[in-house]
Amino acid sequence: MRPFPSFLAALLLLTACGPLPQPFRGNPGAEGRRLAAPPAYRIAVPSPSAALLSDMASSDFAVAMSEALEGAEVPAVAGPPAPLDWRLDITADREGQGVVPAYAIRDADGRVLGQARGAPVGVAEWSQSEPGMLREVASRDATVVAGLLSRGEAARRASETVAFNGSAGPPRVRFTGVRGAPGDGNQALAARMQEFLAGKGLVVQDGAEGAAFAVSGEVTMAPAADRKQRVEILWKVSRRDGHDLGRALQLNEVPGGSLNGLWGDVAYVVAEEASVAVRDIIANAGGLGEAATRREGAANPSPATPGEAAAPPAPPAPRAGTGR
Image (cartoon, rainbow, N blue to C red):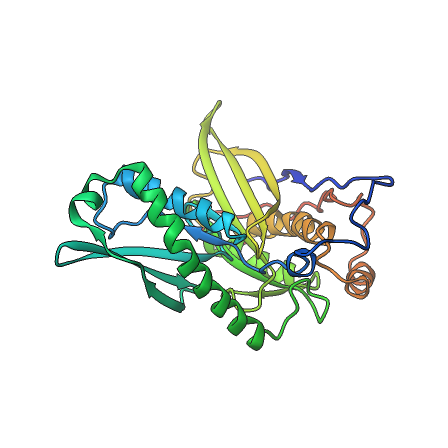
C-alpha cells in the first residue's frame, strides 16, 4: 500500500487591518466593566427528552431557552454541546395539577454544577405546548438558570489553575479523539496526533478541566473510481466559549480496503502534517504566548508559510499484516 501524501487545507480566522474608529475608547459605558470579562464558557441547550414534550415542542423549548439566555447576556446555543461547552439539561415532572420544569447545569466533563426548579405550569397548558407559552416559561426561568451559571462560573474561577488564554503556561487542549475510521484508524490517528501536538508545545488531555481549546478528528470513507476509496480526514479546533476557530481537511484516494486493518505509517504521516495546521490555528487565535512560540519554532523549524503545512517526507510503504 502506498503512503498517504495528503492535501491539507487549514481554514484560519481573518483579522482586520488598519486603524478603526474607536468611539468608546476610554468611555465604555455603564456595562463596560462587566462585559470586558465575558464568561469563559458557552452553554448548550439540547432538546430535552424527559420534559413531557413532543419532539417538536422539545426543540422549540430549547431554542426559546437559548434565546432567553442570550437576552440575559449568557452565551448560549440550542443543540448538542461542543467538546468544551457547558450543558443545560431540562426535565419536567407532573405534580398534582401542574408540570414543574427542572434545570441542571453540567460542565464539559459532565459534572453537575447546580440544579433548580421553575414555577409550575398547568398540565393542559403544558401538554398543548404552544410556542408562546414555551417562550414565556423560558423567559421566566432564564433568570433561574442564569443564577445557576453565575454560581458555577464563580466556583470554576475560584479553582481555575490555568489562564483561559494560556498565558500562565502551555495551552491545554482537550483532544476528544477520532471517529469514523476503519481498522485501527481511530486509535492509531489519536495516538499519533497526541504525540505530535505535545511536541508542539501543547498540553493534551482527555478531560475539559482547565482546557482552553478542543480538537477532534473525523474520518469519512467513500467509494471512488478504479476500485479506490476517497478518504477525508477533518480536524476541528474550537475554543472554550464554543467559537469554531478553524478546520483542517485532508483528502486522498487509496486502494479500496487498504485501510481496513492497521494504519501504521499512514497514521504517522497524517498526524504529523495535520498537527502543524492545528497548532497554527491555535497560534493564530492567540493561544500561544510569544515565549512558547519561540520555543516551538526553535525546536521545530519549518520553511512552511504560517497556516500551511509543509509536505512531510514519504515514509516506507506499510506492509500488509504489520503495523509498519
